[in-house]
Each structure stands twice: as structure tokens, then as C-alpha cells.
Image (cartoon, rainbow, N blue to C red):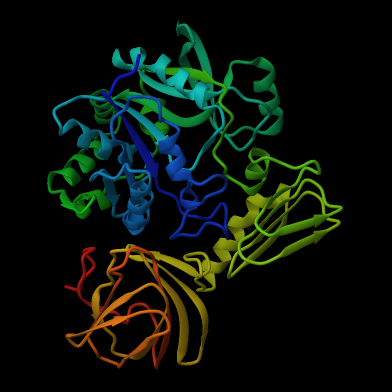
Length: 474
């Protein structure tokens, strides 16, 4: 049974701590491309191909809006379908916002709730589970998908399945927290316990009814937040004030553990929430020595390692069971079994006032991205990439001057109302306080080198006078 009256809801939040330094606060793991041509967010949407579903609703943090929009645009699923959370409040409020938005179109669709940062190997198994869930959810049940465990896992919560509801579906007996290893072994031996995947299906109105029953404070805050929402480009901006007061809670705690209408469908789909580098190594293909090598990596007499190089040759000799991650601005080395402790490094970076937990050296913007190549006292050098047809804001700086040198493509520069067209190997100087803008009028990416010189070089020394992406200073 396949119908367009099913709307995928993709939860694309995340703090970027668990896979640092690949992921960052401003670039959490759903934007990573770990294998194949697509990011994890794109893969989450793409794995639903072949099912006749509606356009997905994506819920994300406001700070990630342009990244989400660009990733959806690349796979042709961008259609004013991104709900922006001004602050993270966990999964229950996020799904409530999506349910309220879905009901505004006059229908009461089934919502298929998915996380944007999970790996699922067996797509057919997922589709079979979804098709099993459709008639059950259509009758008012709140369906969750439980993963048939393949090992005693202490990093996941579990669901105990109860009496059968229909073929392939069971009542939820109880939800249980992450167990000890002995308890996880007992669960595996008993055979009635499933990993909690965080994948759900239910009717939009039914979820809201249950949420209002058990957590009226969350329901009321989300409903108030949607009353004065605004459409901005492809984004749905909710009212910040009532949402800020909304309690933070998960779907499990707020609804699923309280309702009498919970059903679980077991699936064996090669699922992982990729919560650690150890889980990533366990999920990605390994070579004959048990190594997962991504990037320019050479390994000699080394076994069962995860080694990732972003932009340099990385050589490993005689190491086993290790994780080695190289990015442009950080290197992580840890025993694979202790990779979950990377959170401690992120916490230390925060406490020391550093920025490596927030952003990569390469920073993404709605018009493209820039890479901070070098910096020192009173200067900074960036390589800037502007996408075809994109334009930076009309802006000025109080503390720095800039030099732009075009490497490839064509730059349309407006400097104090005078227009300039620059091509490869041509340059322009932008004095302190000058009003300027940069646009790529061509059909290929514009690449240029920017040299900033001045007493203060922070990103907050940008006064935006006009901006097509809604970022102009008030």
C-alpha cells in the first residue's frame, strides 16, 4: 500500500560533537558525505525513492538553514519545506511543528519521522517495514520501528515487543534505557528486545492528540509558535518567543512511553545511528586487513583501523584498532574503543574559548563557501568560491581593507556604485569603509583569493546593507 498521503519528516538537528573533527557545531554529521555522492541528509531522503510519498518536511536549526536548503536543492526536494527552530528543543517539539504545518494544507497525512544522520543498508527492508506500518498507523496507532539486534549493544535504548497486532507488528510492552553489557546479552538471548531506531509513523492529528494529552505544555508552545509564522525564501520561520519557553523532550519520553496506542514493527535493515567513530568503522566497508581508509591514506601492517584524511597524504605503520582523522585544522588520534570520549575534547575546546568545535576551516554560506588559508597579525587570506548566479551581500567594513584576485570564473564587482567585470588573474582593491558587493554572473563557480588587512578581521565586522538571503542589518 503506497500513497502520497504520507509525508516524510526529516529531523536535521545535531550539535556536531560525536564525530568531531569531521563534524562541528555549524556542520553536524548529517552534512557529511561518508560514502557515495550524497550527504547523510540527502541519503535519508534518497532512500525513500521508489515510494510514492509527499515532499519531505525538514526541521532544522536556524543556523543550518542555508546548508539544508543547498543539500535539498541538489536532489530537487526544496520547496518551502524547511521549518527553522530558533533553539533546539529535542524531537517532540520538532515533530509537533511538522504535524501542525502538515495539517494546515487541509489533509491529515501520515508522518514518517526519520533522523537525517542515520545509516540504513537494506533499503528494501525499510520499505517493507513502512508498508507494514501504513494500515496500522491509518487506524490511529503510533508506530515505531525497532531494529532486530545483531550484537549486545550498550549504546542504544531498547523496545520490548509485546503481543502481536498483525503479521510483522507487535504492541509495545515497554521502552528501556541503555543497558549494561550483561543486560544487553540477556536481551539478545531472550529475543523480544529491539534497538530503538527513532523512526516513527503516525497520523499528524493522532500524534498531536497524544501530545496534548500527555504534554500540553509542549503542545501549547508549539501551536503558539506556528500562529505567527513567516515564509522566508524556502524557510518557515516560527515565532521565537513562545518556542523559547517550550520544554525540551523526546518523542519517546513525552508520548510513546505514555500512550496505550504504541505499536512496534521489527526490521533488519543494517541500521546505525553512527554515534561514534567505532560505529562508523563497524558500518562502512573494510578492506582485507579490516581497515576503513577514506582519502589519501596508505596503511602498512595495520589492522582494523578507521583512517580518514581530508586533504593530505596520511601514512600509518603498524597500528591496530585505532581511529585517525585528519581535517584541514585538526587531527584526532584515539583507540577505536574509546572514540566515544571525543566529546571530552569538544567540551575542553569550548571551555578554553577556542573555535574548532564550532566551524571548519572551510565555512559554508548561502552563496558558496570560503576556506581560511592563512592568518596572522593584522592579515588573513581566504579562498572564496561563489556559486553560479549567487551574490554576496552589499556590505562595508569599518576595520579592514580587502584585495580580491580572481583565480577562475568571472566576478561582477560593485565598488561605491561603480561596476567592474573581472576575469582570471585580474584584481581589485576595496578600501576600508567602501560599499561593495560581489556576484558570479557566469555558469561556472567563481574562485578568488581574498587578502584582508586591518586592525580587526572578525566576521562581525560586516555591515550588510542589502542581502538576497535575508541577512541585512536592521
